[in-house]
Image 1 (cartoon, rainbow, N blue to C red):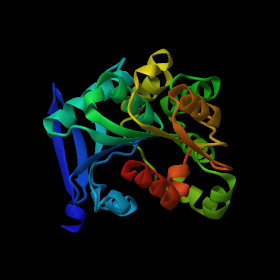
Image 2: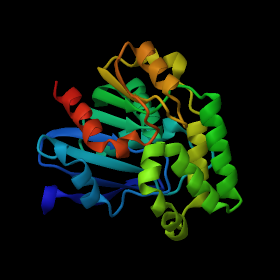
Image 3: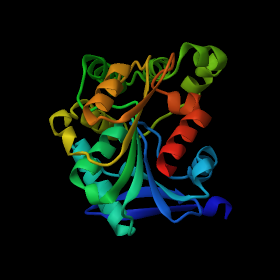
Length: 266
């Protein structure tokens, strides 16, 4: 099978967690995506192609959130379930790439399960809430709760991507809005609240593994200042993408992947 792909499910308490895996290497690499309606199930081929630079040297895993997200579920809970899944699969001393909310989860893994983390990349994320992210998530929760999905989709696209990207692909927005029919609204809202309530800034000094922070100066969700604060507090290496927004991982995919790969290989 191309890229040695795998799609499977792990039982966790009374629910399940889906995951995908690909790559021929022996070193484990955990990719933790951000808040989204999208699910990892059925994406192994797409993810293997997008992140093919890692496939030769790493066995790449991408874990979803649990299927049945309870009220009050926290980022720490997500990290706990992710750590459980890693242990069930015999994964230890992995490199971790966390994007947005995934970066929050990665921080918790490094603080609460340091034996599982070798190196870590934190992309467009933060260690404590700020007014920008609180307002953004509150607005998204309101839109989704009231069934204003077209408004939510447009707002998400504006906040995620740079003006250059939107200008280039703006003609696709009406199609995305028309055909994008997300499922699991209650699940999304509970995960969004988890992101809005995350604050481990006072404990961030517990992270001792090597860290690279990748941020975007025009990040309209987490803010570029949050990435800079995170790097300064951790005394970590940092690279800021000038003129780019929160979706820099997709807009500059090749450059982003190259920086992550080189950091992990160093």
